[in-house]
Every structure is written in structure tokens, then in C-alpha cells.
Length: 196
Image 1: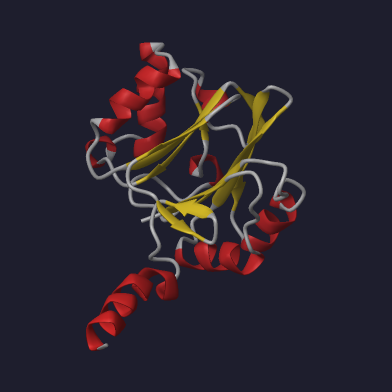
Image 2 (image 1 turned 45 degrees about the vertical axis):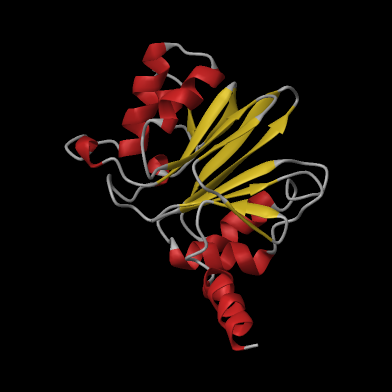
């Protein structure tokens, strides 16, 4: 299913939560942060230790950060198909494992119509969006048309969350299925209320 975690300024992603997200979504990870008026991203982490080592220097209260752990549903399990994807028509840049970009995209969901490609559904979507040459606000409108999908579009100045994100520990998650306690917490809170 994948998971996206959005860390606003003032928050920190706990290392144990990163481990748990990766354990439940073990097909690679990546992250992005706004730096020097650009989006800096790293991806292709196929084990959680390397991901944690690399993300640590950016996982500070001063930074806004987006993390993605992948569970492959469409596309091969390779470092290049981890998220985020730079918004570009250039295939080499699209699959690059780190660098600076104007805009990157993270996705939680599956678009099965792209399964015949050697790319993932998200990579194909990024190529399509780059071809449209839209401003971020218009890209958000297009992404909202893809029902039941969750996206984060990160630009050099703003984080756009598309879809229903859950707040937990001052962070925002595309889903909480990676953390059973958080996932079932609302159910148990309701059940205890009914018993009183």
C-alpha cells in the first residue's frame, strides 16, 4: 500500500516509526526536503538502516520533510522506482536517486492502467504531468480527480497533500496501517466511550 509521512516544522519523525513504516512497506524508501530554494531529494534506500542514516541530518525541527516507504503494486522492485519522482519528462532525471528539483511527487495508491509499462504507475503519471506543463495548483486539481489516491506534491515553497491524511504525533500520514496501535486507536476510544 505504501505510506507517505509529512513532517512539518517543529516535529521529528521517530526512528522506531521509520523502522515500522519500512517493515510494513519494504520495497524501498526515499525522502525530500526544501533546501536552498529547491527541493532536495534522496531515494533508492532498499534497507532501513541506510534510509535512517541519510534522513537523520534533515529530520530536525527546522525542516519540513516528506518520507515515503514503498510497497510495490505496479512496477518492479528497484531503487529507481522508489519515491519521490522529480517532475520531469527526462527519463534519466525521473529515475535519478538524488538531486535538486523544482517539484517532486510522492504517491500512495495504485493506478493499474499503467501496469504494462517498464516503469511504475507513479513514474508514468509523473511523465504525463510533466508533459502537461502545469503550475503546481493545477497539478493538484488534476491529482484530486484520481479518487482514492493520496499524493504529496512538494515544491520549493510549499507542501501539497492530496487525499485524506491522518494526523499522528504531530505528523501527517497517508495511512496508519503500518502502526496497528495508531490504526485501531479511534476504534478503542469509541468502544471505551460506549462502555461508560
